[in-house]
Image (tube, rainbow, N blue to C red; front, side, top):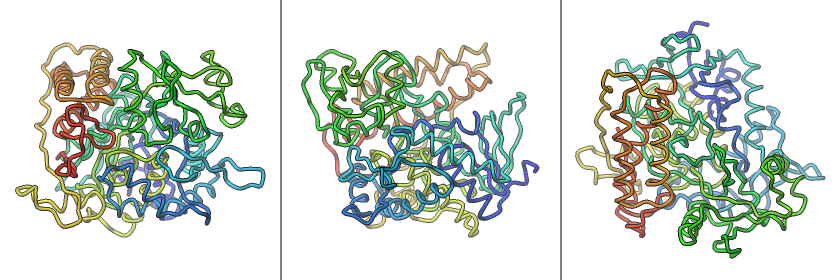
Length: 530
């Protein structure tokens, strides 16, 4: 198949992209290509531990409760229509995944085991291997894609979107042989994940460099909610990066958070942003770089969480007797490429799904275990829209913010629609023609600056320091290596994220301003970067 013959090019090989690719290739017989900068199974999806949140049984739980929990976590910035799509269609998508071969944990009667995590009213999380859900989801989807006729481009790095006559026509990419070539397609679906590598302390793999969001920003595609970065409160505090994640399900099963004096200081089942803030403040108060997760009261730890047990054993910790040192780590990018309910972006022919997108589902803070579900739901929805002949966005989901606004009158939005403000960033000027510096050194400086100055707690002074670090990275000589392009993408996303955090003079969801601790009704809106 020639690269320019594709009906759909999927960028990324996580749950959103592979769910879409399978449906496009098998159900709709589209000519599909999947392009990933690593190997097919190397997406961030495989790192997801907790599970998939979905109401699968006709018991006391309901999709209405799931919707309410999601809206509560999102702190006033979720699009209720998008959340309704997520919770209503989610159970069907989970069952589709099971039909593809995904094996979730079951009890002695053969019923799916359900866990409870922070922010959830009831236990509704299906999981695999105790804490290896992402790996199992990825395994099943990779196998399904390999059974199709989809073309797979591995170790290929997407550089820029091709835009012609106001439509996305494909991408330019660097291939393993060092050449840069065009990959043309009628439609491009971006599922490249988030930008956790903006931070020095993160649970994200090295590949999470915000590539799709950065390409969109450079092409003038609408991006929003980029200041909302969720920190996971229980990353194992050891000298390893990415930080090993201690799943939220541990707290759902009864593990307790204690400070270095042994005292409890927060309700362990509150949403992640609340717990991360409480931890950070307690660590600052006591002058420590960690708190403890006490899982000594959990029975059958090795059987329930075999992967975590093996990880802990590898670093000399025994959860039966040792308190486990933990600290918040950058975990999930809540914003991204603005989409409607079908995954259409503001650029016709360009679609987005999963962590790279801003569908309106997460708002200011993601509810635990909604991320895999979002990919399962919105990746296939984009394929359905493409098959139906849709070519551009509609005013639904988060896209209502963009399409409902007059750029000259940002205060004018339809009733019931979350407002927004357009922000235009100046193009990034090419760096001076000098010998390139080592991108890894600049990346390390940038990551440390954002961790220190634009992390869980922020204020005007710290954000100014973060902006200065971004400015220094912007003017650094640019390397043409893959590492250089990843750094360029990180800096592109960092500039928008720090700018949005500076503009948002309030505390909301995952964004906490120490100098503006209250939530402002006037800022119940999205900063939309174009």
